[in-house]
Length: 347
Ligand SMILES: [Zn+2]
Image (cartoon, rainbow, N blue to C red):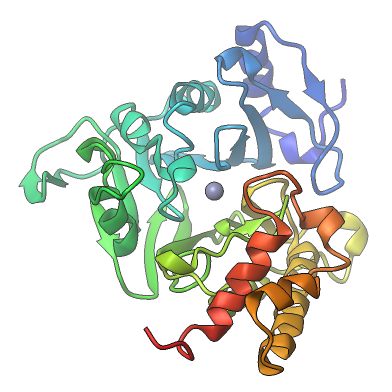
């Protein structure tokens, strides 16, 4: 078996993990086109799959939202915990990657497929520091749980019951929150930036940028399977979505001048396959074109029904329309329309 360059230094670990699972299931299909093997971890029980992104950064797919895992001497930093149902499989997958304790969970947004696993994954870890906020009070002790970091909005949404769902259990609530544009830390030999995107998918989204590994975790701002889900009721907007996607293209660097290396920044989306900078630009441009078409119709005084009938997402529906799914082209067009007319309407 040949091991792709990305995996040098780790084949023993991957082979050991495969042996532990009784698996020989290596695929040579890489989402970015390079021949990087993927370790299938179906035997973990949740149907999850581990994708090696960098020597110390992995993506766990199939756990609700994508989960990113950074591994190093300080322990494990997990970006998004997946759904509650997938948490046992996520924890098992992390244990296959490293014996080091889980230190941090960073949430990219408030949705259940990203924060649902917080409590279980946190309880499988241990904090790096003695100070924790438990039940709203800051207490000094060595808690046997990993810290959870997010924007303030994630905590606000997790602690409040809605018409359709109760509040999350307190063990899954963020223990550290921030409301300013950039939170940072330095763990496992690299800077980690957590960048608030204030009005994109919701008002509480964040990118997580591993600077040395050159990996950005984008959360639900980027869903490569479909049009971006813009939740206007929770503070999302088309203008903020395009601003966030543009920010993503600014953070990422493509593989130039030596394109054939297929190097460059890797972007882990909330759902779907890995993207590079060109992919993000193409996606951003698609979203912008649909926005421009809806904007013209709005300027011409068209109603929502007339805008939908004009099919402003034409040309992209086959690829991103998610027909029959929960977030279709019609849902997207309606969210774009509502974003653009918001503020013009009297409430
Ligand atoms: Zn999601």
